[in-house]
Length: 413
Image (cartoon, rainbow, N blue to C red; front, top):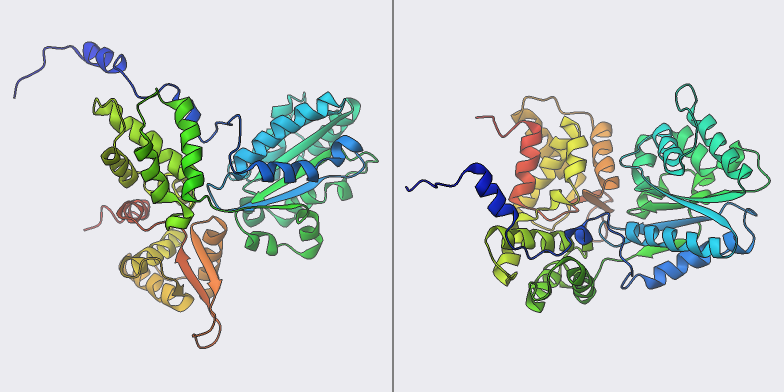
């Protein structure tokens, strides 16, 4: 084999200066907030109606909205666009308004949430030595002194409900029961993946959350095509992404074509296809490149990667049991008994003592709230009523391998 005469620096310089299909790949980032929202304009209107009182009679009450929808349906980006545009609209009407977006998956406690809000507002509050409740009161005082109002979006509110002490959730949701204020300056948007999360709250909390509901449905193939077309114009050089490449991604992931209707995943496939084209020295993304990108874009990279890394051993074993059952019966639901039996079998194979049914049920419930598993009650055709369980992400070899790696199975003989 002939050795290259190039130095490592020459090799890297050549690769870094090579032509790319990308013009601005930041436009494909999950954090990118686009200038327009195709197929979510109506949702933006609904949010506008929900918060119009904040402009008409600011502070008369604490405004609330609840956004519900599966992963990749545009919930986060719509909330961010709403926050950005509504803030400017309010200011044009002489209402001082700020918007803060908090991800409850990353900020899982009341203390972390208050720190994020205070940091975003650049409040001169020393966090050390103060309780979360005291910091929240200081935030309210800060707004009061400056005659300002605030919309806080609690994204992935599911995680806070599932992991935080009830008292912390109660404090946030029923803030003005805890803080005496004639002018209500703090308002909320709650974002969850499904209704089951909200239904676990008691009525006194649920009534404060379930107001002005905005539901997001998965995207169809034609909707995904339009979204991808918009991003392509911003992110890629002209002529590098032909229509047939976008059509293929849209067909693969459109909800009406058997996909999940997940725009985030579709955009990730497009970005990965660009990487493959660059590494292969191609000036255009072909259908073959799209197929390769789609095969690589396993579901854990967008939905499960962070979630799997946070699961404990027996939660991983429970998920692994559902994955194993799905190998022979893809897309099907399994009875809780079937899953628990497979869970016990996997426990024995790795030398673990199976947990009791109550704890096992909690594992399933937690992963349903995380969006990894789906559950429903059995209907006609089954004797008695039981809970049915299924994967909420596509089954793949990569998913199984990722779980095995986390469980420590990959190195076992």
